[in-house]
Every structure is written in structure tokens, then in C-alpha cells.
Image (cartoon, rainbow, N blue to C red; front, side, top):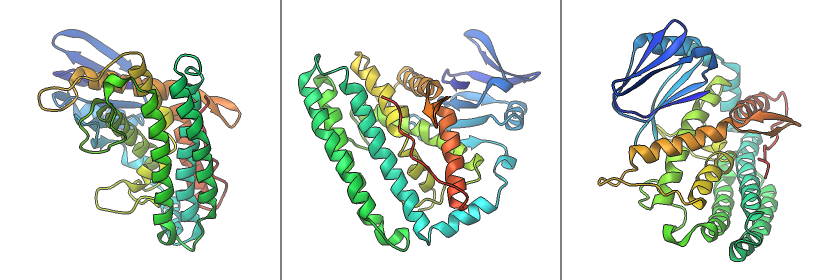
Length: 336
């Protein structure tokens, strides 16, 4: 279970082995710590008792704090959950070998395949209802597949030799995918194409907020698997930049964020922006709920059904195993 704390004035305390949420204008809510996986705090007016933080750390419950744009700015977790050494040593060494290229290639392959899967998912509902959007999707799919062929052709001794080429393939895939998405969105949204930080249109602001929540969750998943979230391969190192998070998240953006948010927009829901150009608290809560609900939904992985949250955990462990040279790192593709 994932708990979202979005109401101003909420106080999180501990009562026995239950996390208690108290709010002056609302009934007190209690959740058993054994049933919790994470707590996401989206408000700046919330109080967490030290006792509650300690209990969450003991039970392995990650607490993420995200700002009004969805960017994670703080995290509480047990330092003992990430006390591995061999995996991180292998991760650092892989940067200088072809294994690092394979991890970067995996990130782009997972992104391309999951974008194609999502377009197929939305396309099956538009063949009759929206022929123009359906045609745009059918044109996009071969383009995404063709980019995988280019991806396989990139060879080198280490990631620094081929990063620019890989990023170029990723960028062209984004143009194809977001072009098809633009054709699906209602005209009143005036979607200008995919924009990252600093976007002011409601679609990109909603997506950026959803990605921020996913980044926070992925950072915890990678750390728990014994990996260093700030040492990536496809994305370059920079102080404060969680480059492995950005690598790993590529395979989950479409399934975990794009799908629920595009579905909301398609059903007529619209993000609201306040007078300061930020998403309103109600909008942030709706987006956080949509992403968390999607993470709780089930999909097929290795022939069995698991929650998406658990699939991320298993994929992070597979990445750690691959970097240690102990097994393969297969691509997860969401069902459509």
C-alpha cells in the first residue's frame, strides 16, 4: 500500500505499530505499518514525528517528500537497507566496459517497446472512434521498431564512446512517440509537444509531476537492490543528478505515468493551475493518486502476475545481478 499525504496541517504519528494521520478538520486515519510500502508527502504543511519516521525505517517504509512540481527533494529510509558493497563496486566497474553500454541500450530498448505498447493500448480504442488518431499511431509503430535496429548497431568499448549516438536514437524515438500522443489528445489541451522542466502547459506539467513521483519511487527501489542511484550509464554524471534513476525509469514512464495521465485527460479531466503557475493541491493529489493506483495494478512478468511496483523491484534486482555478471537483464514490456 502507498500512502499519499496531501492535506495541509496533517500530523503523522505512531500508535503501536500503526501510522496515524491526524488532521484538524478530518477524521483520524490509521494504517498498519506492515501493510505500507511508501509514504508520499506532497504538501509543505505536514508534521512527521521522529517516532513515526523511525518506525517507517524499521518496517522498510520509504517516505518521499515531493515539491509542487513533483520533484523529490527529500527521502527518509533506513541506512541499513542499502548496506551492500559488491553490487556498487561492479556498477562502477561496468562504466568502463561494454556492460555499461548494454545497460544504456536496455534503457532505450525498454523505453521504445513500452511506448509502442502504450500506443497499441490506446490505438485499439480509437480505430473506430478516432480514425485520424489511429492512423497516426499505426504510422508511429514501425518507426519505433526501426530504431531498435539502429540501437543494436552501436558498439564500443565503454559507454562514453557511444552515448551521443544512443541519446540521438532516444531523442528520435521521443519525436515519433509524442507526435502520435499529440494526435490522440483533445484539441482544447493545445499540447505543444513534450517539454521537461519549466513547462507551462497543463499536459506537460501533469506529466512532469507524475514523473517526479516515479523518480522518488525508483530511487528507493534501486538503493534497496544495492545500486547507487547517482551512478548511471546513459545519462551523464552531474552533482545532484540521479543518473541511474533516469536510466532505469525509461522503461517505466509509459506504463506507470503516461498511461494513467493520458487516460485521465482523455476522459475529460483537466489539470488546474494556480495564480503562481503551479498545479493546485487538488490537481497534485489527483495525479499522485492516479500514479500510485497504476503502480498497484498488476501486469505479467516472467509468466506470472505482479503489481507494477513489485515488477520494478524485480527489475532492479535483475540489473544488480547483471552488473555482477551473475545473470541476464531482460526487458520488461507492459501489456496492452
